[in-house]
Structure formats: C-alpha cells, structure tokens
Image 1: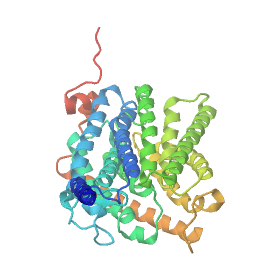
Image 2: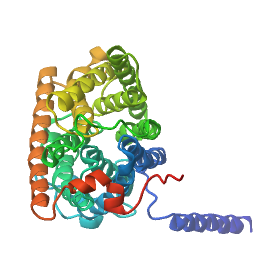
Image 3: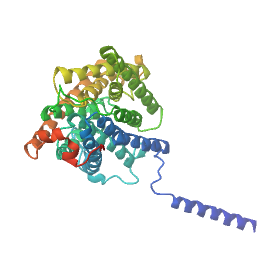
Image 4: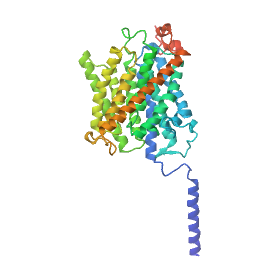
Length: 435
C-alpha cells in the first residue's frame, strides 16, 4: 500500500514539473540576463529623453522667440521619421551581414527580429530599440546648424535621406561587420558614428544654406537661457544612458563609463566658464552648459576604454578645444553654424576619438590596447577612420542638399525669415503677449 502511494506521488510530481515546463513562455531563454536587460531598457529611455525634450529645449532656448516652435517641431518630427526609417531599412543596413561598406537588406522592417531573438545577453528587439535612439538624436543634432532659415520640408527630406545613406552605413563600418570594425577602431558610444557625422553634416548645411540675414553683426542673444539650461541638464542625465548603456550590460564597464562621462562634463564646464570669465569679465550660463556638451561629446568615444584620469584630461581638452573651434568657425571663417554643432560636437567627437589611443593605456588607468597594438598603430586607425567618415559625410550631405535645393528648395524667403518660421512654416507662436 505504501509503495503504491509513493509511486503515485512520484508520477504526480513528475507530471507537475512537466506541466510547469510546458507553461514557461517560449521566449524565456537562459542566455538573456535580466539585469542587463533592465539596464538597457532604462538606457534606451534615457537616450530618447536626450532628444525629447532635452536637445529640443536646449536648442529652443538659443533661438529667437519667433523660431521656437519650429525648433521643437523639427525635433519631434525627426524622432517619428527616423524611428520609422530605422525599423524599415536603417537597422538592416547597419547591423546585417553584408559587405565591408554596407549591411544587407535581408532584415527590412526588422523581419528577422522576433520575441526570441537575442543580441548578447539582451533581447535583439531591445538592442535595435537602443540603437534606434542613437539614429534619432544624430540627425537631430544637425538641426542646430540650420535653425531660423530652412524649409520644414527640406528638414524632413534631408534628414531621412541622410539617415539611410550616411548614418546607417557609418554605423555598419564601426559597430557592425564593416571595415573599420575589422581594423579595430575604438568608438565606444559614437565619437565617429554620432558626433563626427553630425558635426560634419552641420558644417556642410551651414555652408550650403548660407548665413542668416542677421549674421554676424545683428544676431540677437539667446532668448531663453532658462530653457537652454533645462535642456542641457536633461542632456547630461540622458548621456549616462548614452555612454553607460553602450556597454550593453550592467557591470563594471557601464559604471566606469558613467563616472568618466560625468567628470569630463564637469571639467569642461568649468574650463568654459573660466575662459569666459577671463575674456569678458563674467561667466554665462549658456557658455557653461555649452562647455558641458563639449565635455560630453569629447568623452563619448573613449568612455568605455578609459579611467578617471582620462575623463579629466578629455574634459580639459574638450572644454578648451571646442571653445577655440567656436571662435574659429564663427568669427575667423564667418560660417553661420547657428548653434555651433561642428565646433562642439564635431570637434569634440574627433578629439576624443583620436586621444583614446593614448588615454586607453594603463599609464592613464585605461583598459589597455589590444595585444600587439601600439599607441601609434591605434592612433593611425583612429585617424584614418575619422578622415574617411568626414569625407563620406561631407560629400553625401552636399549631394543631398544640392538635390533638394534644385527641386523643392531648401531655404525660406527673406520675408519669411524676418517674420519667423513659427508663423510662416507652422502657423503657431510660442508666446502670446497680451496687453
């Protein structure tokens, strides 16, 4: 009797375990790390937060009151457009196996991304979403070069074409299976992919569009340093997801990337503040937050490879180097890159990309270079990668802009520029003054 009950109980337990096994969701896989997944989910939200509303408010505070709505519209529209294009074609070009220059089109509309797809220790759908937020903010950075004088239709056409033809291929070169990846290029979070491409495109946009009517002698000061400071603060917070999330795991690498990001931004802000204080007799909040962005852009490519000494050095170099670049571009060369995108993001990203070859070494508490690779070898890889990216981005951006200029037109009329883009392009006003 006792043996019969024991036998029945054993079979009952076996059936219970079998039922539990069958009820476990098919997508639960041992390779997925819940801690890593939770962190990258958070980082994805933080990077989108950088664009909406961070960068949008940062730029909106720097323009005249009559162009605030247009700046906000540009950012929101690009977030929507670039998301759709990334799903449709961008992700496939960037991260599908193909040639050394372009990924294949085998994953259009992410047809191969399923609920059970994996990318390392996180779901592939999450990896694709995280990368999508980068594809949103990169064209959005370029907005700062052409504010207050561009047609809204031109913004959409240029940004969409640029994402597919410039951004996605460069992403493939560096982070996919492209030729720069095979060289061993070091770009942790986008010094080449994001800041070099956006900065170069911004410079070309500024040159092709030409100067604003008020540039340089009659420019109005930023209409709302308050909005700019709020937006900059959001960028700073979001950048922890930008750089820390690029580790694609919740571990020591993400933690170090986060702290070097913070210290570089802090040092660069202080550098910019001191320069202004000495030069003009008083520091400005707009200058200080611009220094912050310079420090963040400069540390981005190096953030996962360096230690705290490297973060401090990049803050010093980024703060000073980008300040000098702003003066050169705006005052010496007379180029109306309205919100200094090339001088801050382009120059900062390039400086960080080159200096990582030195600061990643153990002498500066970095993780070290690959076995058998010298500082000079790595520096040349970084230099060639930056040079090719600048040339590619400049040529393609110029072609896209000229094609738009020859067809639908790219610049608003002089009268519309005087009246402002808010009313002429969108029929709205940011501020309504009552008597």
